[in-house]
Amino acid sequence: MAGEKAVPEACPVDRKESMKFTCNVATLKRALALLKLDEPKTHLSITAQAAQLQFRCDTDDGKFCIDHTTPAEVEVPGTVTISADALPRICEHTTNETLQFRHHERHGCLDIEGEQHQHVVRTYVEKGLNPALEEPTDVHEYEIPASQFGKALNTVLFASEKPSDAEGADRRAGVTGALFQPHDGEYRIVTTDGKRMAVLTLPSARALGDTETPVPKRAMAYNACVKMVNLIESLKPEVCRLRFAENVVSFEAEDVVLRCLLPQENFPNYLSVLEGAAAPLEVKVNREKLLWALRIIHVEDNPNHRTEFRFSDGQLTVGNNTHLGKSEASVPIQYEGPDTATTIDSRFSEEALLHTDATNVTFWLNPDTHRLSPILLDLAQNFRYLVMPLR
Image (cartoon, rainbow, N blue to C red; front, top):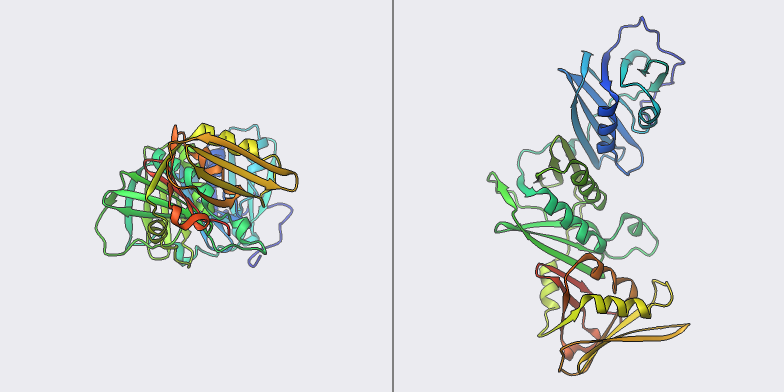
């Protein structure tokens, strides 16, 4: 990495320090856990000033950063940048209650001292934060009950395309992450991978301030959404705040702030997709019985199979046809319409049912379109799930 200096064998103790502070190990462990980003090449910047430390973890590609502030005994203020991998193992294995840090800028090293151990860690030339991630001033800001928001994200992320999927040779036309769309005191969280879509509508998105800047119709990055959920579970805050600018979203919970760039791609027009899938016939199905039927027919764990949903007088039959043979199972329903069927990817047939605890789910059917009709499910009063059919 540009800016690296050779690691000296030791930093003489008589050299004037450009930064010096003492930090409680338990406090440091908590900070590192909160700051951890599951991204390659992450850096940790520590700024010591006025009896506190500001930790910042950011990624080499400049797309993510996360800040956390904690108290400390600061003797000489300053800033140092090291690899995010340098501290966790030291903190894990030390038996000391505190560690002392001395930064020797001229020699590019950070001394970390305990009672019976010492470490010399390479430092990097401070490259500064990606200007696009600086806290924006013209923003849409919303305050949301944190547990509600975390649960909502956790509920719908299954329908998003994961970054590992997007990088494959068979990339689908999906968008990684989740779209946040406020409307009249409510908000929707929408995810899609191009073949399915989950839409969850929730109350209590309180707008803070007044701005003419529109909320971008771009998804919050998948990894950022996962980190938001983790922070809410760790901190258990009462509320969290989301700030949207043109190219960046900021998430704040207690003393932690996560910022990430928004992808350039606009999110699909999910309202148009839902309107196109609207259907006149409503059929309720017991969720547990349907889940049993889907599990019993999938005798082979192969994600490339197809599952048929066939509606007929008084029953729903699900079927799976593989090289091992054909399996079918039926569940009773209140249905007196014409026979209709549609086929979807087997990967998508069970997972949505596992993300709700509703007794019944509702299918919306359009017999006129027959096998080309998407499956539109109401998993709860405020939770819709759509799966595109297979030809």
